[in-house]
Length: 155
Image (cartoon, rainbow, N blue to C red; front, top):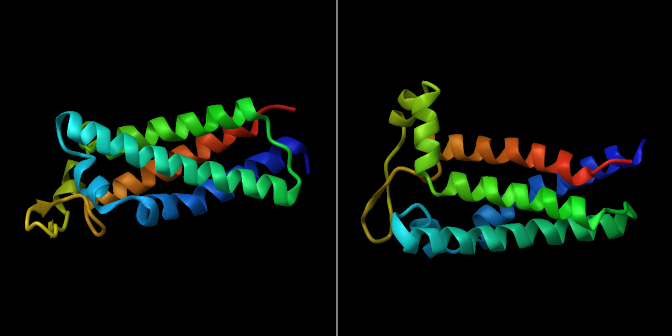
């Protein structure tokens, strides 16, 4: 197996697994409920979530790389993690995904959303089981793939 393929497989596996951890276990309730809000409170909550999400992925890739003795280029890995972080931030601000869904004819899919209630009683259309949640997760997994290709570098 060539080295770039080994690095791609390692980064893909680590980021995919840690996506679930970073997005659902590491993210705080406040971040989850605020990251899509307008203005600076939403931007800051989203940035804080993306920072811990990215650190979770970086830790996993580093641990796997060392354990499996698959050397990684720090520059390529940083580029892949930065791309993954940027794409995650865009999706988690919510408005860009809603706009993209409308532009690609997926607005009806968003209407199939199950509205859930937050602990404060407010309605939310972005949680698990909603159309936006599924578009969000598929967006993240697509960008994890592209990010892993970038992080794998070249031989």
